[in-house]
Length: 187
Image (cartoon, rainbow, N blue to C red; front, side, top):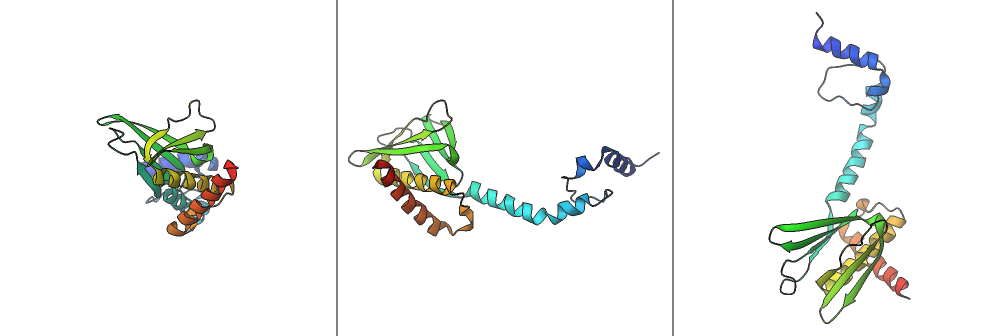
């Protein structure tokens, strides 16, 4: 009777190298013929760097702002990171709806202002319905979010990897780029 290890080795061998080329075995004494695992282990640090870059992009929040309470009983939240914009709409206690918009889908961002309150509107490509505007934001938050989003749109168009730059410096540059981009679009 064959041991489980021998049976597994035979199955992997007969399944062919095609199935195991992209498999990396951790904490295993199973060996396959050829150098498919050697190739995978040599490229592991590069792939891990790519995974770390994606993780950094996904977990670094660039800006968060909320609508103001007395004017909005259940304040909505805007969260901006390197990859996407999340808008969390709240309609009642412990009730929310989240809309995630990739930066690549942003078409235009506009702000309508009154005395000290503003409304942020986001136009999106490829969505059936554009997201509801965020009303009752502070004017400073709305303009900062608009400038940051325009800067992120410009960086995405230029294919710039922002995770390699210091956060504070890149934020200032993105906001400056966004400020000039929004000025250019309003002319």
